[in-house]
Structure formats: C-alpha cells, structure tokens
Length: 324
Image (tube, rainbow, N blue to C red; front, side, top):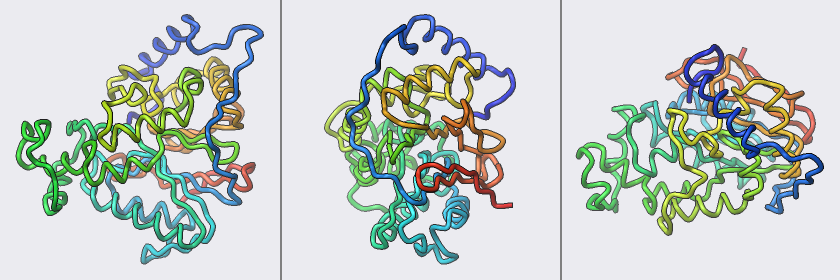
C-alpha cells in the first residue's frame, strides 16, 4: 500500500502501465461492443452497509473502526443488528497485531451472523504475501503470537528454510494452514447489491474472467489444492498491477481515462459503483462521478491517517463517516 498523490515512482508507473494497457486494447471496449453481464452470485442489497479500509495488524484501529461503523460497543460486542460490514482486506502486515486482528474479525463474523447482520472480509495483497509466504512487510513483533499454535506443519519445505522465529506464522497462514483455511472463506471480490468491492479493483479483463471464478481459484489455493492463481500475482513494486488485489488504477490513474475503464468494468459486472482500498488517500475519495470510492485512508498506526469509514444506505446513498 502506497500513498496516492504527487508525481512519485508509483504514479509514474501507474500512468505508463495504464497507457500501455489502454493503447493495447486490453481495457477499452471497442466501438459498438456490448459487454456481457457477469453471471456471478450477488448478495442482496443491505439497508445499511459500512465499508472499512485496510487495518494492517492494528487491533486498536480495528476496534475503533468497527465502533465508528456502529457495529460494536466498547467491549467489542456486536450491536449492529442487521448491519452489513465489508472490511476491504489487508487485515495483517505492517503492524504487530496480526493474530489479534484475525481473531477479532473472525469472532465478529460469528457475532454478526447470530444477530442477522454480516461481516464480510476481502482478501488483500498482504494476505497474499502471508500465504506465499513472504515476510518482507511483517512487523518483527508479529511473529511471536503464532508460536503457541498447535498442529502447525513446521517441517514443510517452504517453512523449514525460514528463520526459526518466522516459521509458526508462515505455517499458520500458508495454503492449507489453519488460518489460511479460514481466510479461504473470504472473497477476493464481493458484490453486494449494486456495489462491487475489491481490495485493488476489478479491471475489465478480470470482470470478464468472472467474480465467481476468481474467488473459487483463490479459495482453492488457500486451502492447499492448487498453486497460486493469476489473479493474486503481483508485488508492491507495481509489477503485475492488473490483479484484483494489486491494481491502483481506480485510486491513482488520471481521470477521465480511468472513468472509461471503470464504466466498462461496471457494465460487465452489472453494477453501479465500485469500492476499492490498497492505495492510501488523504481522505475517502469519490471519483468518476461517484462511480468509484477509494477508502483506504491509512487508519493503522503504521500510516497514522484519520479514522474514516464509508456508509451506504439502501444501496444508494453513499457517505463517508469520520471520527471527528
């Protein structure tokens, strides 16, 4: 995750990559083309939905965000009733509270379900890093909490080559591991009513590929049945930034070009708007006449951004909520 704005290396890369894809015809619908609506399953619209951006292993930020959403009380008990919460991925990485944040959200999913509400959690690029396993963006204090877990396969060849202190986290989160199996239930792309949610964003090539197919392939990888799928490939250096967990186009590429790409994706998906995270904004930002909302405002201690979440009422009224 990198802060948007300015003319730094990331934005220069995004502009070059965006132009190359557009010129090559990978993103733009040809004249007279009629995109097919994706046939994936759709969760019915919610009377009230709140989307929460990247948490990055900061339990305090997670607790404050869910309270701002009206989901929980000071004791972290679910008080949201039928509220639907969508957390946009990157639960882990960069902060020290990896395991605490995972357990916090998994517990809330159960509490919300019991009250006829829902907590949906997307998979972000830092969940991908964990499954590989790639520890370059893991806080050194995050490893210890996993060492008390029983039943970890610490002798797996991919685990054995790691430093001893890192092996438990890797074994817990690599495909087939206990946490990876729970993460496998999380979607890479989620559609609720007329809104599509993805950590990075859904470019037309992935919209055509299909939400259900993406989610199925990612689930099969995390449960240990297959190798890593194409939709998760990428790195924070900007390489392979087309993937649904990696794309920064909708949050960082210039308007109006990106709006044409967005409209194509939405037409294929049969949706009205898209909500993305992954690229830190100074505040929740609407683009392309509010057809896309970039909501990662860096609320974890790693970034120190202002606490904000996004409220959607009756699948129509979209409003940022602030802690101020």
